[in-house]
Amino acid sequence: MIETHAHIYAEQFKEDISEVLERAQEVGVQKIIMPNIDHTSIDAMLELEHRNPSLCIATMGLHPCSVNKHFEKELYVVEEWINKRPFVAIGEIGTDLYWDKTFKDQQIEAFKIQADWAKKLKKPIIIHCRESLDLTIDLVESMKDQEFTGVFHCFNGTVEQAQRIVDMGFYLGLGGVSTFKNAGMDKVVPELDAQRIVLETDSPYLAPVPYRGKRNEPSYLNVIAQKLADYRQVSLTDLIEQTTANARKLFQVHD
Image (tube, rainbow, N blue to C red; front, side):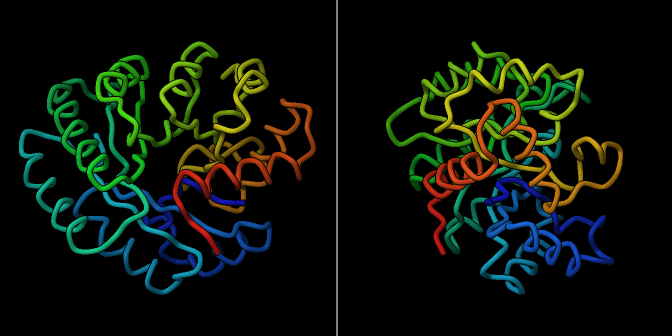
């Protein structure tokens, strides 16, 4: 399996990261994509990648919840890094209208700037869109060209929204929310394009049932994969093979 979204460099993993990585590998996780948050997370993320180069893979971007009226300073840091070394993706970028709508315009501007960088570099983007899915789909549609791709992380929308995303050549990141009874994903997941699904945990957040409310970690990816396989009425092996192939294609990661 390829874990396409985990913040395992976060403070929550400081005491036991070695055990966390060990448990992930024991259940079959081969790669862990680590989306960046802002300038405060870069050192820890790159250090973890340096110590585990065959397993942990860093990306570079500015999370919408770190966008404020001084966001240009943060973008300078991101730009400096993407000019310094290669990353498999630009992310985590996007919009978040759940906590605060104060900097909505700045979030949109930061998203467009970073998406343009990704297009020039021919790299995918990792999109955060909490309480702003339609807005973000509209944004991506307005910027669409042949070089533009990425993943809508933590997808929990409708079949119609999923189709718009897939029609643009983007992927759907499915994680712990897909296991929540009240999310309604049991009806949506069977309708999704098998070639456009990737697995994620969003560790340390959004742990799947039966771990809901606890710290999430990449080893729970097999719980998510099993639930998705059940929804789609396919074998766990088939679901893992397909989602792994999708992730390899999207992020261009190989053994």
